[in-house]
Image (cartoon, rainbow over all chains, first blue to last red; front, top):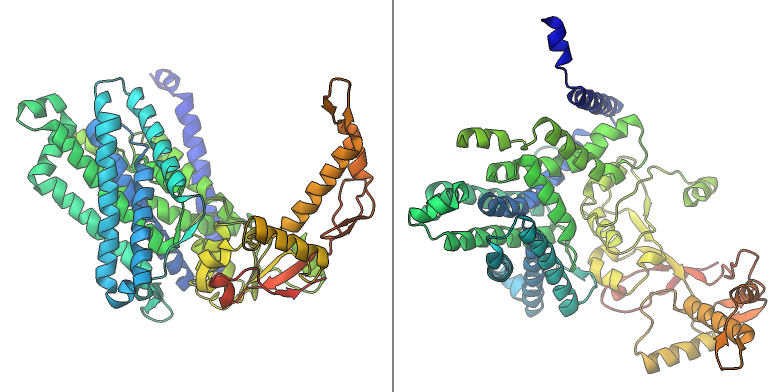
Length: 354
Length: 210
């Protein structure tokens, strides 16, 4: 009986567990050593966490677009990063225009709302066109075909913007009302822009959850993601729901583009690439197809990128740990996928569906 | 190299960091740098990462007034414009040719005439010299055969360039060594950016030169 059980040990699994345990030991050891050195103050840890949270909120907003489309079409919309870029770009033109005209200084709140609306509308319109021109004609094609189209569409959009607006790095105008910091208690303080980014992202995510859970369109979206043909039989216009899903995801990406620009104040035609890859990672990390997973994955990734290098590697004496932040982020992804192949929240979803 | 010389001259290196191409969030790495309470941050990198470091250093506790210094990778008219107020007071090392030099003046006049404005980035004089040296070399070693085809011997061109002596270029009197290094090491300077450069004036005034 016992020998039977020993033979059933899967050596690959065992190896993966050993790798996982070694990494965990590295993380715990590194964290312990870093904290013991006491090089960083509590204020600095707090700052790092807030930076990570803000960056993670942007990832989460973009990741939602990947995950919504995947949930409904089982397709990875690689052009989503360019939807993000285009929103940021057109938002930039609105922002510079209003800044030059002096409108931004007089009505900052209204100005910011206009920037958001411009960016979100641009993104949504582009997403509608993308869906209509590039994806809908290929609805019945094998799954690889729309994937390649998505990559093509991504390049098309990227180089269209390059052709139209050039390759230089453009500086986003400095908006005075969102500059500066808000003191909390003691030495703790938080930048206004970080508060805005985190709060805006949280609000939009809450809106999305409520929308998907409690509106008729949201219900229809969930129905289409379960089974397209049955949903159609129930009187749901599947094409219209798919378009709405694209609009929803693209608006969030457009808003993410504006928040990203507020934080980093730089606009270029290839600015979507890296955040897009990171957000896609976040969506997979959280369990692709699951909106709550995308949010969690985004925040998780942002915080790991910001805190990880210092917390895990600084104490081990690794030189220039920040160069390794992507290594940390992607190692986390690989580890999560080894132990939970469907992502952090993926399993729960599939169990709930079954 | 920089750090070694800096330490030799009595400076203390509080942190050595690296960022990736395409990184945008520099605040974590700057927070880590801030723990050493540096007086100056030297980042000889390129746009746009350099712009992001300069701008975000002003938002990190402990680095609000730290002196910033970049190198020729950021020595371009787009840098102060894109970085805004964070670039004011920043130092940049880069190529420098005295504007009162007659040959350089003639070059700038031709530039303004044919292209307009002033050269937007640093290495124009070096590039001008290098191109002319190469063209001279081709003229010297090229052989035209019977049917009119021009042959440029690779080794001959190489030998010509490596053996070049006392070439009178914009960047000085150039003599190449056995490694093909021809620069004098003197056509360099450290520049200081001010409000004027942020508002579009270029090039910045030279602050120090060897």
